Length: 379
Image 1 (cartoon, rainbow, N blue to C red):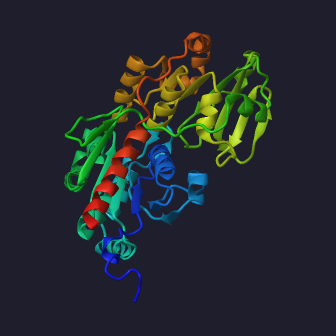
Image 2 (cartoon, rainbow, N blue to C red):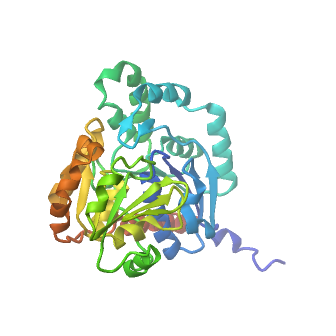
Image 3 (cartoon, rainbow, N blue to C red):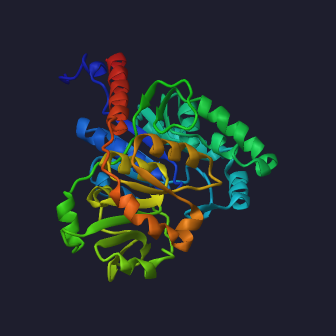
């Protein structure tokens, strides 16, 4: 007789969750990576099925654990022609092709999650995961600081083309079993958890990063980032006048290059972006969620570039003004380089470490509690 006989039904199955991530920019993937990293610390045996079209390399060492990456279009978001400009006609065309969700795709994913014994579906604003969870009868958790239906409402000139998608997405988001809202939040709703800014944590001391970049200790490091979207860096010639500074521009090169006090890193570099943020004396970049959250927890000055046409931008900018030391930079100032005349003002701002707990820890605690409560019912 098996020693398991009579007791097997009391042993909970191995923990396994599915994580659906929007591929829009890198912000949602960075937020998911922050949460998964904490989950790995708390539950080393937890298996995560990661569904996204964000490049596999972005998740780096996370995939060395019990994580399986599934390349899948989970979301459209917004099509962008540059870090600061979105293409609404192209966005509408892709939404028309993607929504409503393909029934065959839904059935395949439902079957996959059920066969693998998935106990929970987590979605960083990717509505596909919520639909799959609903059909499979698996609890779902929506993590958001905005949802796409809210973003699309910010383009009144395209409401005729977007209205059916806004209604459909609002219906899908409402199906989530649990909702987690993270700060800075764009539209406060009834939520099961409200957290501080969610960001990945650094792993290498700033002194070590500066040595790897061959930046002298006495020089200021200015990180210029557009949230993972390659940019042309339209102002290199004016940077040489700042002899006491080094400017680091990741994501717009095929290999690492040094031109005087300008360092360009490749799109896929060996440097972990949170390490670069925490090594910097100031950050200049698009005011996107993951950049804001990482700068907030690093506590350094932020020269933030606002996006006049993007609905989230105003909310994020207000958060910087209230809880961080920052200097607003318009799109025109960034493009024509006039921001350089205010660089000394930015560097003169004091450090201001964030006072709120990293939301990644709060989200991970919530997810672990959900898993433990389900285990108790199974036992």
